[in-house]
Amino acid sequence: MGITYAVWSGLGIVLITVAAFVLYGQRIDLAGWIGIGLIVAGVLVLNVFSRATAHGCSAAPPPRPTPIVQPLFCKFPVGWS
Image 1 (tube, rainbow, N blue to C red):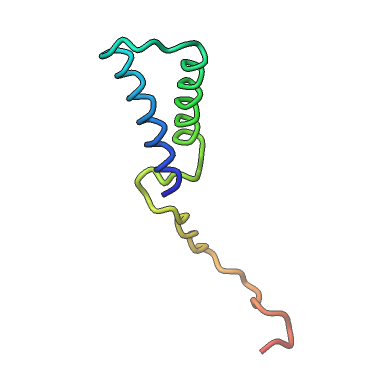
Image 2 (image 1 turned 120 degrees about the vertical axis):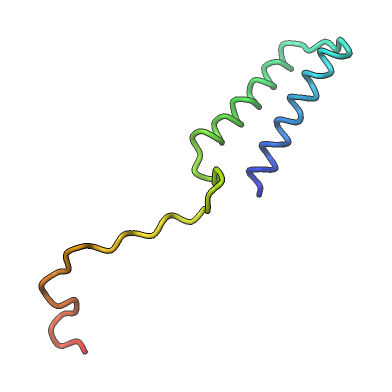
């Protein structure tokens, strides 16, 4: 939930800033554009490279397949019951 909140908050800030720039002519200085670029880069890194996001599937890893060939020896050392 924290990653989702961060992504939507970041995108909301970027979209509101761009809308203010386009609709109302608000000027954005170099530091503002750098900040917007960092927000977009952070969102891209979280969505593309991070394993913290689930991308629509369960966060739990898939179960491991059972081996086709079982070992020929006993699973427990000699003397164990």
